[in-house]
Length: 482
Image 1 (tube, helix red, strand yellow):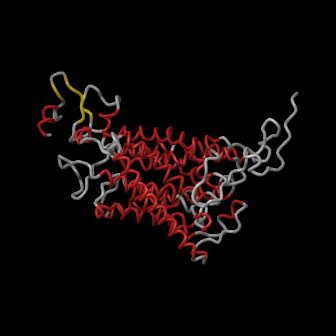
Image 2 (tube, rainbow, N blue to C red):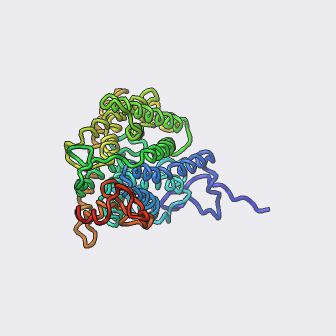
Image 3 (cartoon, rainbow, N blue to C red):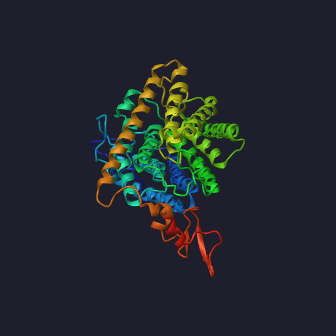
């Protein structure tokens, strides 16, 4: 019978042994609670499916002729962005560095990532936090990807996503989540990623939409007099996507304690209540204006509530969670209603719901944060709370963080897009004829080969034995119109 390895009793200095210990000589599992490990592994699995769920939601909000592109982008983010995270992403924001701006490549390809306690919480090993962290960046990249909406070329879009995560996401993640980051040292409260995730992706999407320009509408199909606005082709997909996002977001926020504690459970409850409040608020406002409700509107409110509670879930009392979701959804509703004033075609409401929703969430966190909530993890006893707890300066910190994340993302996104657009063969926008016929026809063999996409309907129409479907636009008519 083999003898068991001696347990690790004390971790050495990181610079001496970044792996924590030699697993051939010591039991590196011994210092960790198996419940914490199990909780984070399961949460990682649940969070992973947020990325394709966003793809389903976006696909439903597109016209049918470009819906497959969003499913593709979600799988691209799940694969390529994850590889980027392994190569250098995790190291850039979780390296053991002391500068306030960005980490180094000491954890590149996860070479020095194993059993040593993570910077997020010494209760879990570095490799586990890395597995959990990759789901954040892939979901953020997919939120951003919706901005290519029916007119962005696939190759430059995917290149931009990889550049954006490098120069925007990892910088902001280091600033807020690494103990050496300057926003973390300032005292900013961001429990699960309002700045690096929502504000960054929302304002990045605004920049992308600005650089792409408006969608073409040669047949005057838009339902809005001032901006291109078309009905989602499949509200059912929007609902399914929202369900899986909500499901995953409970783990996304709940596991951001990086251990299993009452604070984790508290964060889950806050997340659920905020999403519920946001959904109800949006439905009431929509009915007040139109005397009807919509699945898309209901889902928009739910996601607004999830966005608003993301920075707050582990800091605010449970009796404020529904109010936070309600206020955030109300703010997002009116930003969405009047976004035509800035004349930018941002048809998936990424800026309104994620960008401005993240700003509202940051501010509400600074207002409602209470010292007793972080203490529920059994470790954090030095948090001063927010305005509600008479720590008035916290509101200033939260505003500073929101403005910083929004400005950095918007400016860097514009620069990246401008440079990419000037590179040979990498102009950002598809040809007008490809846009009218749909991105799916241009890029994917899954598109119905025996049919064509009607530019007025955006739906595949199969050929009949004696000609075309009644009411369909023939290729000859299509040519004449163009």
